[in-house]
Length: 86
Image (cartoon, rainbow, N blue to C red; front, side, top):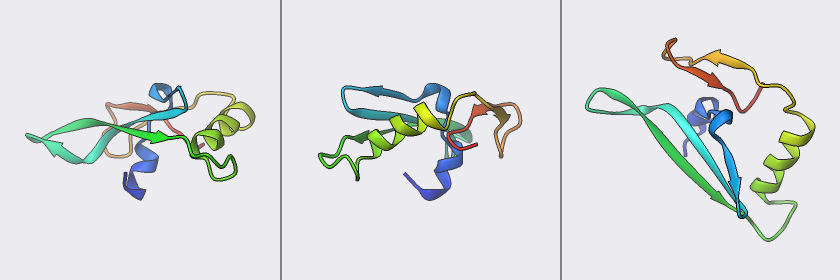
């Protein structure tokens, strides 16, 4: 995952299953046959809770991200994305 992909993560499609955080990157820079693709990204749980990205996401969802904020995608206004960050 690239740093530029962070604002392309659709939080509505993000799931946490068995200690694994599954993110969906919508319309990344790469294209397949000239069309934007949807690229999945999977992050596994780390044993140390302080460094664990999955645990940090859970805390973020429970304390910070209370309401969904649908916005048009930066590169394609026809795609609506619910951003990871507000």
